[in-house]
Length: 127
Image (cartoon, rainbow, N blue to C red):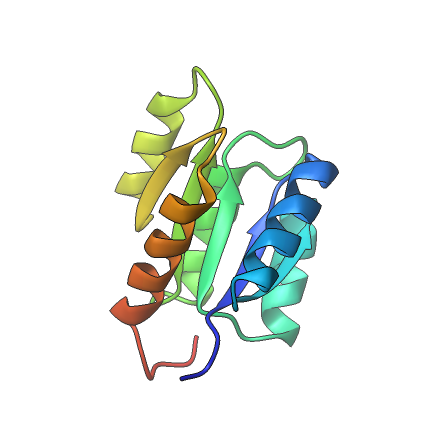
């Protein structure tokens, strides 16, 4: 079985880096970026199975990014990552097509299971 390819998008560079490292250690193929624009560029160049997307980011925010992702890659699953107080934004993201959302801080075991489940949703389909 191929590793699940995950794009992590979070403006907190330390968090993106830590999640990338922890997911790679668990057999995922994870890559972290820190802006919405970087995420969109990465998706043009490198296919992935799931995007883990922070809702609150400066510049191009998570809700704007998910709209663009769903326009260009409608079958690509997006899991929103939200901090305290932005559950309403996460619900809005669900309306925009997010697979699910998690509150920070996230338990790596829960995240891992959710990533596998999201990737299985569109198994065999290239975004």
